[in-house]
Amino acid sequence: MLMRRSTLTHLALAALVFMMTNAVLFGIGMVAVLTIPALAQYEENLVPTVVVLSFILAAPLSWIIAPRLRARYWRTHPADVSSGPQRGPDPYHAPA
Picture (cartoon, rainbow, N blue to C red):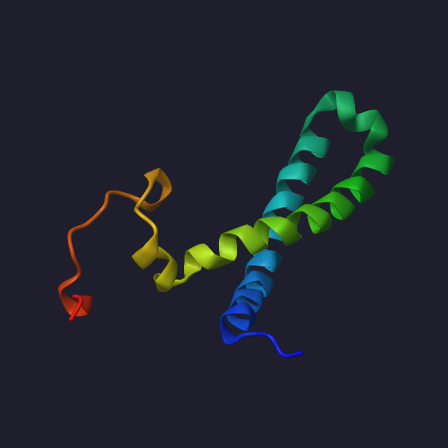
């Protein structure tokens, strides 16, 4: 069974976003483990845990983030706080 083109695009975007999301989650976890003195005694166990958790959590987060990278998403969803103020109608893509 073949996937629809939009699903393939979603998957490709999610794969690209996955790498960046994984890096950010890993960095946040490592900074927390290495800078909090109370966690220093558990460092041997927490570093591999951070690696695994960042890998696992990056997959669903990237799947959620991926559609927001497409222009099609913003034509059907209103602007929100994270996307900035809502603009007027687009003169280049006005409905016919």
